[in-house]
Figure 1 (cartoon, rainbow, N blue to C red):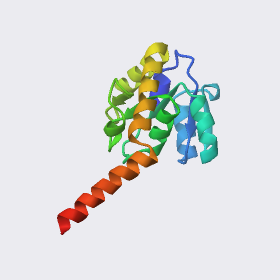
Figure 2: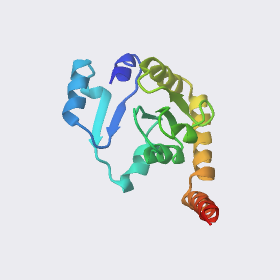
Figure 3: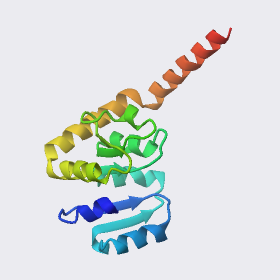
Length: 162
């Protein structure tokens, strides 16, 4: 919400999807003076609707303080959406900063705003990062690739235990 308030000079429209405290979100938006015309709140979105939502997006933002391996980030990248995410958990294994997306330290609103603004203002960079992100997901995070990595890992552990 703080980042949104600093991006009031843009024509960006923000979409909130997922579970969370609606009351807290709406209170923050109201206190920050962000009009209802600047955002859409969807709440829970069914899996079969997510691809359509991602394709409508110019930028996907994951400003989390805690994540392991966020599926939503992988989904957005697979749908060729430029991504900005906080550098927590395994996010830096998914996004290589400035190559397949943009990272910022959790809570650093200045860098978050700068990253979002950069992608909104630079369509060529946005497209380049989106394509690189899509390629990364397709080469490293498909179910076949992940299954093979798990198989090799467990095989190694089992062989070392003998």
